[in-house]
Length: 262
Ligand SMILES: [Zn+2]
Ligand SMILES: [Zn+2]
Image (cartoon, rainbow, N blue to C red; front, side, top):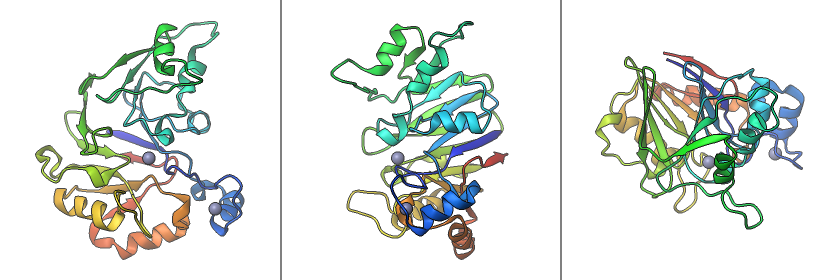
């Protein structure tokens, strides 16, 4: 199985607009792994994209992603959905029409409203840009992608299998993941949103109080931590250092464009 982390940032990208802190200044100067655009992932073997942050158009262009046949939305929060106009940009006024992209929504649905119009995605559906479904499981070739609903009632993780490997992708709200989900034991890989590392807030995911216990509970063969926020004030080098400090967890911190081959 091949996996590409497109963007490894969280709700606040690095560099953050209007910010001249040392982390953002370094990112503007060094570029590369010091820059973190919005949280998103791509499965190249089945052309499946997971979530559409505001920066998705740049990420797709920069990383030469030419085909997207499926889009899975994990939940409605804007850092995962406000790049949805790329669905329109893919199709509108095109000389050679493409097949509509299959958009897979959480069971709770997804309404992106603009100026009192109905959902943007419903409009794209009516225009023939996409199909919409809220199915719990989707099969694509050898792959099966199953939603794992989180306890907050609106966000999902995804169990991804290709007949050989099992991957659990939970980009956000890991603190709401159940500890009694048998199918998650011993995955080949977990890709988990970091939650707050330096500090966390009531009701929010904490890296130390939620994410590390999830790794201990489900014992994946390897773990990648993503959704890394500018406000943590960690540079790429600081995350490399933290990997050493937490060596017993065998985890890695993601960066934009990270490729994982299982
Ligand atoms: Zn900053
Ligand atoms: Zn998020």
